[in-house]
Each structure stands twice: as C-alpha cells, then as structure tokens.
Length: 255
Image 1: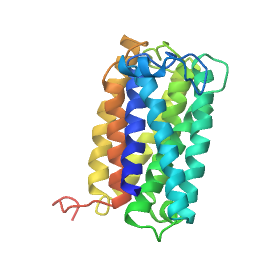
Image 2: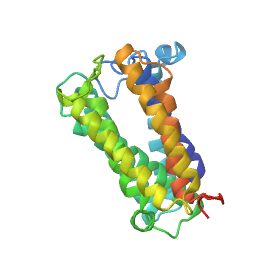
Image 3: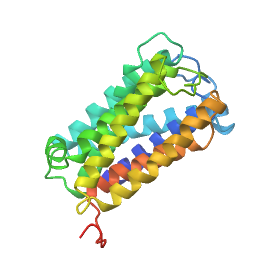
C-alpha cells in the first residue's frame, strides 16, 4: 500500500503540472471541494478534476492504511495529506490574487513530503520522516528550491508571464532569481556529495535545462505554457526519489 500511495502522490504532482501547463487551474473556480458535474468534467479530460479525484483517493487510502497498520509514519502521511488538501484550497485563492504566494510554496513542499513519507512506508518503515530529513543532507536545499518554485508559480498568478530581464524589477522576477539560486545551491550540494547521490546530481543538472524551458514557455504563453510544466515536475520527482534512495554509480571524475 505504501508503494501505491507513493506512486499516487507522484501522479498527483504530475497532474498538477498538467493543470498549470494547460491553463486548467481555475476550471472549477475557487470552490473546494467541487462536486457539481464532476463525472462529466472528468470524462471530458479536465485535469483539475482528476487532480482532485486522485487527491481524494490518496486521502481515503491513507485512512485505510492508518486503520489497518497504525504507526507514526502512517499517521504522518495522513496528517500531511490533510494539510496539503487544505493548502490546495488556499492555492486557488493564490491564483486569483486573494492569498499570498507563500501558500503555493508550502503546498508544494507538503506534496513532496507526502511522497517521501509513503516511500518510507514502502521501503524503510523503521526510519521516521525526521530521520530521513536529517540523514539526507541534499533534501534541505531540495525543499528550499521546491518552496521557491511554488512561490514563483503563486507570485505570477494565473495567466501572467514572469518577463525577460537582465536586472530583476518585479516581485515575480526577484522570486524567480531566488528560486534559481536555490536550485544552484542544490546542484552544488549534490556535486559535493556526488559519489553518494550521482543520479540525483545529473538529474538536477538536467532539471536546470527543463527549468529554463519552463521559464521561456511561461513567458511565451503564460496561460498555457504546455507540456514542459509537467515535465518539470516529473524531473523534480526523479531528483527526489534519487536522493531518497541515494542512487549512485562510479564515474572516473567522481572516483
């Protein structure tokens, strides 16, 4: 069940990227939960509907897991899902400019914490989430980058470009710069520990390229930047999983 939850948590993140990438963020308005015409909208392929359906299933499964096999990790996963859902509601108000972008950043952090929690349930139930965060040093800069990436999304709001710049002038541009610096810190950290996190290091390097493509896509078509946004999320999941499992392989330059 832990693996199913982890896969579902990752799927929700990617579907969230599809929602952003194809301009469905407010397809259901700011109502949450939304039940009217959900089956019809789901059949039409509205990714925001599927985002909410998957999130609901994730929550139901977390309750079942907690009842069948109660434990600290299982309780942690359930609590994270509840708080993430509440912040998901808040992100709708971020999109319409009625809530601060920090809520989007916190929502994204909690989504990835949920993913890691259920990976622990699946593969290492004796290690707590705090223990994982303390022993996987690159996760610190990873979550800083995740938080700032969410703030970037929230700061630009719905259908707003970041804009090209040399010197940042708007709040969106400043936030994007800080996000970039956080990503650079992650790469430096992974580079320092490259012998332990080789896969994560190269995935993060590739993610930088995807990040710039996302930036260009947002500026070219702010309302529908396209498939590069869910690709960005998919690459981020790859970085997270690579750090979690500390996947490494020998390279001549890394020893």
